[in-house]
Image (cartoon, rainbow, N blue to C red; front, side, top):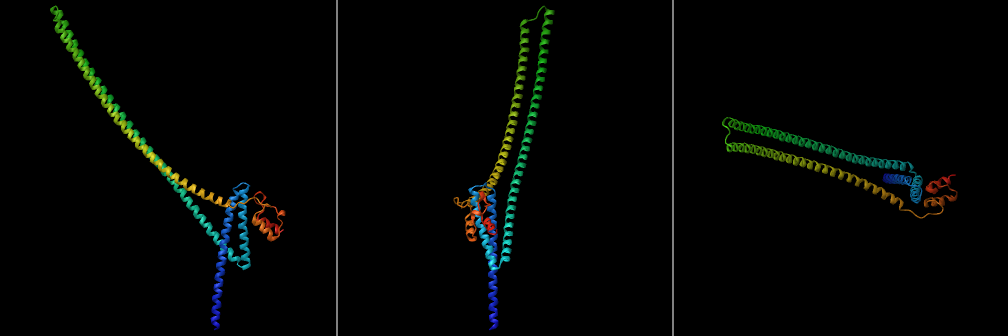
Length: 326
């Protein structure tokens, strides 16, 4: 019978200890979260100029301070101060680790954006190199075509010169023959001379016409080749421009995505700021937070004798507690 009672007592003690540990753990975790929230509000307040918004955030901060004081008082009454502090430190460490992870994720995102920008730059460099290479090839083809056309024109001019020389020789021979005949025979047949001169002139005209036709044909070929080269250059330029546009579009999309993420983060921060400022109430007399007024009533502190340390001299809970200890 005695052993049964001892076992039951042990079970009750273990259960009570487990409940006490859970209570201390939960209270410590709650205290750490409240401290973290209070510190965030204080950071918001530091970024604001003195005014109603800052005073309202100070009001919220005071409520957190009051909650922290209540938790400390409860832990002291229950005799679990050490357990509560250990639990608070453990929770704070977890919060810090989570914040570090968030920073790491943000760093990775920034690195990805930088990598994408580097890739876009490399692609643009490659496209520019390809465009330069295509332009160089087109210029080389144009030079080759111009050289061929020049050579053909020179060849044609040489042929025309040779043919003209032959025609001039024929005319000279004919004239010489006529002159000699007149000197020896007292004059030659005039009609024969006219026919020979006409034939020589016709030969010169035919030769000139052939030379002109060959020159026109060579010019037409050069024009066709130049048109082909120009078309190839335009096609290469169009391809390079399309690649540049595609690369720019990809970079713009990545930039828009990064900007969207930044906008979302800014919106979240703005929403938090609005939530922090959402509890604003009208100015109150005396210039003290509601939590400070309640604490002053509890401690019997005259607020008119307290110097406020908050925004625009607003009295906070900490000011009331400090005044009560003087």
